[in-house]
Structures are given as structure tokens and as C-alpha cells.
Amino acid sequence: MAQEDNYQIPLRFRKMENLHIVFWLLKDISWCMVWRPLGIAMIFPTLIIAIVITWRNREYMSEICHNAAIVFWISANAYWMVSEFLHFDALPLWGDYTFKHIAILPFVIGILLLGYYYLVWKPMNKEKVETM
Image (cartoon, rainbow, N blue to C red; front, side, top):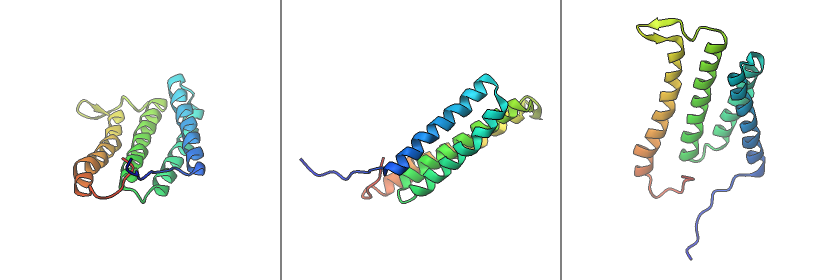
């Protein structure tokens, strides 16, 4: 059996990632239940931990791209939640688009990062050991 390279997540990183999930779920439950103060408060630890996870895994392009996409996803999600909580989500912005639609920008940035990784970087760097 050939030896495989393994990507191991240090325990302190895994604990942070697990806590991140708790904050993220609290944020989204708060959004669902319209618990404005908790939902808005949970944006900060959720986003900060996502940024820290991205930074700590910067040695691997796969981790940078996937974790940065998560940062943009949380940003879009948080903006959308706040726009609903503060009732500016349905205000007209341009034509049929409302202020809620601004959330598409970070969503698209996340997709572009993943597209770059899978369509450009990964095919050009087949010899590099990556996590994905």
C-alpha cells in the first residue's frame, strides 16, 4: 500500500472550528426566530473566527480559497439578515433590485474564489500536495 500524505488539523484549530459552528447556528437560528440582538451579536464571533481559520490555513491554496469563500458567504448572509432585521431589505435600489440583493456581491466573490481554485489553480498545480 502506497504511503499517502495526510492533512491533519491541530486540535486547537478543530476546537475553534467547532465553536465557529455553534456561533454560526446561533446566528442563523436568531435570524429565523427574528431575535435581532442575538443575531446581530453573533455576526462578530462567526465572522472573526472564519477569518482566523482562513489566516491559520493560508499555507494551502485549497484552504485559503474554501475558507475565504466561507468568509464571504457569512458576510453575505449577515448583511441579508441585518437588512431584514432593520427593514431595508425591500427598499428599491435599482429597477427590480432591492437592498437585499446587494448580498449577491459577496456570494459571487466566494463562487469566483472557488472557481479560480478548481478551474485555474488546481489544474496548473497538480504536483502540489493540497487538502482537496
